[in-house]
Amino acid sequence: MSWSAFWLASFVVAFLAFSLISLLIAVRGVAEIRELFAALEEERRRKGS
Amino acid sequence: MSAPAIVSPFSWLDGAIAVLSLVATLWIGVRVKRYVGTLEDYLVASRGMGLYVGAASLLSTEVGIITFMYQAQFGFVAGFSAFVVGLLTLAVCLLVGRTGFVITRLREMEILTVPEYFEKRYGRSVRVLAGLLMAVGGSLNLGIFPIIEARFLAVVTGIPGQYLGWTMAVLLLVALAYTAIGGMVSLIVTNYVQYVFLAAGTVVVTLVCLREVGWGSMVGAVEGHMGGRGFDPVADLGTGFILWQVLLWIALMTVWQSVAMRTFSTRDAAVGRRMFTLTGFLFLGRALIPMAWGIAALAFFWGRSAPAVIPEAATPLARIERLDARLGETFRGDLEAGRLESALPQVDLLERLAREEASRTPEAFRFVARAAERKGEIGLLAMPWMLAATLPTGLLGLVLAGMLAASISTYAGYFLGWSAIIAQDIVGPLLSSRGAAVLSGDEGSATPAGPSGLVPSQALGMTDRARLRLTRVTVVALTVFIMIWSLVYHLPGPAYFYLQVTANLFMAPTLIAVVGGLYWRRASAAGATLAFVLGALTSLAYLVPSLKLDVATAGNLSWALAVAGFVAGSILFPRHPLRDPQEGPS
Figure 1 (cartoon, helix red, strand yellow):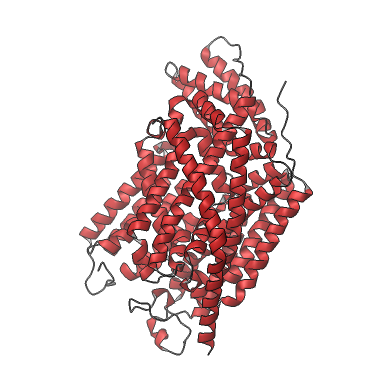
Figure 2 (cartoon, rainbow over the protein chains, first blue to last red):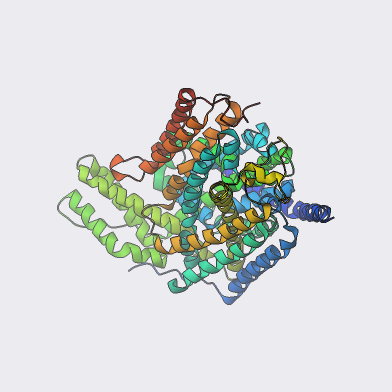
């Protein structure tokens, strides 16, 4: 495999992985932020009571 | 006839998209303030961060406009060889993610900053010394971000020079506002939104590059411009540089404060490890994608250029001198107007002639160096100029929103990271003189004992509320410093080297002292102190011109001397069984 083909393959992997994982983050991130808020709220209530 | 100047098509629509994205970020960041009650909420979001927002937060913090610029510059000057750094980053992330090297142990200790570990392991003086070096190196590192990023904004938006300072000030203030108010909770939420903008902008720019230039032209430009060296990283960059990058990335992924804070913020050590595995591929993209933009910019301007003409003169050296003088008259103007197709062939010609002549006349070496410096300057601005020349109105606004999101999230993450060090590891310990006894008193809001059974040492003498206030004040002070520094400081050379030297000031000794502390029972405070002193001095030696150290040699030397100092200090001055802290390897 030549250097040129190797770098092309690396770039394709990098670009596809970046795009797919970003999509995954955009979709799954919302639920995680809701969970974080719920946990912080719960802790605040626990400390307040 | 000189080439026409590039005029950015930036319009009110683009401006509106960018401003709206900023307003939305600020609004979201400030709204989450109600969730912040304690210092732990503020610095590590009560350790409730999940996998996907963790990855988004980590990447948003470590990607700013400056990252895109220096990575593109690296691709421009080194071609595809630069890609090796991205592959090394992926390998390091996967290694850390799979093995949990350092991060699992630090996460389980439930600390807030890396130097906090040093107090537990080596004592307070090491904590303060490490904190001081980190604060100085980190703040100086952050201090040039606005200088570089202002150049990007000037090119892409066409904002006149007199408004650039104000523009950067507004960006810093937006980051300051929600960081000071909401801390890590604000950061996690805004980082998520910013990541979506950043990722969209990155994908758009990549597709535009491939459509405008094409992969074949990029390969052709590197071949024509650099030959085999543009593809073979060992021949181009050398094994010394590659070794140093491996060490540097291991340190960055484990003990660099803004990265470590994300580890400390995860729900548990397992989520931290999975976050690194997932982020490894994002870090691969963080390197390779902007490097490819830099190569595309090289192909873009190289394809538009005409061959430079060799000036008439009696001797080869005189021809070189005349060419250099001609460049001296036109280079700055060409760079500021985007006429890179004029400047690039002349700089290339100067470098080629000077290299050929240097074997006969050593005096020609200075022209080789001058050509390389100018090529670096072109490389820094080539990518923004290509974007200004190719992106249409509307898309430019979307890309700018992505770039601004990347930048503000970096400022916010670094403000919190470095101010946490300043407040918790320098000012806090120095201010506290009342000792641990206060914790058993009536100051009930002080942080309770961690899982190790030890009271977090930074709590000594200060209530949780006081530490939170101190950290917020430090965030503000740091922002003021960055604003002033970016106004008064002028970069002496390439940004990449400045960034490496300031980071090197503490990276090697920090990782060595952490690894030694965690895994070597005989590691002592004297060893850690010696590692910090020698590691920092070697990095500073790079700034002494008479020593003629290149950046990779200075970097590797810093690691070697820090290891030597750590081992020698620990063996010669071992831990005192009664006086020294007891938290060692288990």
